[in-house]
Length: 384
Image (tube, rainbow, N blue to C red; front, side):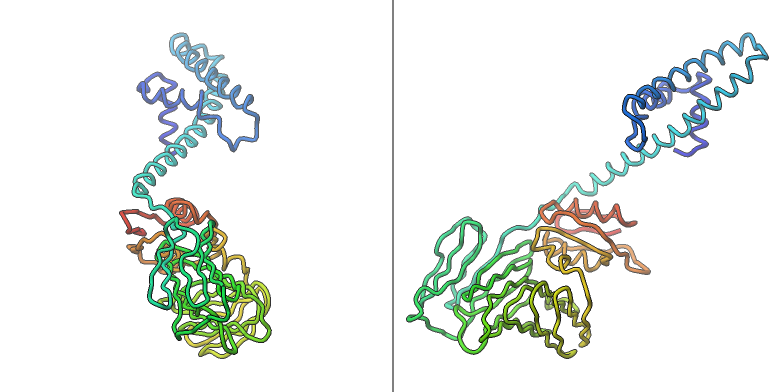
């Protein structure tokens, strides 16, 4: 509510010409809405102030009525001062009410736009074995899923998939890889035959053998995964992707290398890794990130926790542009984003929210930090 509108409402209220609804608005404020959490006073003081203000308004209305009949000149300065005090307080109060009404309207608008909320993803994946068998890892079945050629595949009670060698004498290699693949809205954790632990983000494929033989341990990645590599000084661990190759002995690192992304990022948390790509070859240290983009490789110091927020069940954004954010949300919630607004400069956002909240909680956080609105319609989210 604008200041001039508030003044007019106060005038009608004090002169007794306000409608019942208008009078109720003022009464409601002085009796209830005055208890604003930003006031640096106790709840008892807020209550007392509200009651006092209402009392003074009531007294002023009575005084004005008496003045209109008797018009004692000596009382006018007092009446004027009192009216100014009350009106000023009420104008401020009604501006606050206007803000509260606006907030209520915004929440109602948001509730309508978010009516078709989307639930978060979960532990989902498909395992394709070297013999072509497919196993849906999304169901609740646990225990041994497959056993052949000296290899056992088990799904633990916590959902962890474990490949292990049960009989080294019967190990055979048909030259093919296993593949674990997470869909949109899926993630999974797997222990490879050498003990290396891998966490896969949504829309990720990882190809790996049933056992590692030869001079190195090589896997192929398309998507995003966090690795905790089992140490083996004689056999380096190699992660190959379309854009790069990462070589390590034993370390913790995250790779983001989706085939449909313009670049690839390798972030080191512990140990040392060598990143090779069209842009050259770099050895990075903990807290550094090698970014390959347009056949150029750059190494930057970063907060490594931001690169594994997904593994830790969070979305954490720090000056991140909207395209990058919506790409992440699209993979996790299985939605498509449609941009209706044209931005001269792509806005950036900062904030954090649980990855296991509905998508509305993430969108709400983004709306609070930027001049933007989202509309959910089935699996399509429109950005305006």
